Image (cartoon, rainbow, N blue to C red; front, side):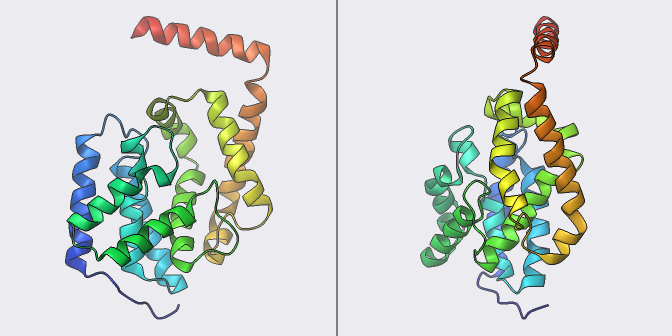
Length: 223
């Protein structure tokens, strides 16, 4: 475990936490997947990964707290879509401008769709926490339908998104950056990606499409 730095005081971290918590609850209906349950999980895990890799824990915590505010700005959007809101929140809570810009860069750097092998320690900690949430065995069972509703996607679109963004990263060996996380969670990640690959194949089967259409028709009648 490396020596940690601390750039942001705990009062400021608490102010950001409180602001994001209130936003998540105010817009809970819109943030069915990326609500406080997701933010708090990623924040907690990212802080732990930061402790192990020597990243600045407070910067990682704050980055985790604001990493998904783009979903308040635009459905199914990249992290960059939340930049203005992210920087506003950080400014309101007293984060120094140069630190706020650093945090925004970390959020962009950690994004699954565009991240590379060699990213900063802070981005690695955030990425591993967010990736773990995706790889949890409970996520496709309990939360995937919430992602579909939140972002207005079809099951086919989500399957193509997950396979397209995550499989190459996994195959190239940096799905997780932290070696302990890779050793502990790679089995979950592999099972999750295999599941979504199967879903991607299944939704192109005409009989499965017919089945899904019938299920959606029943749901429409029930609502």
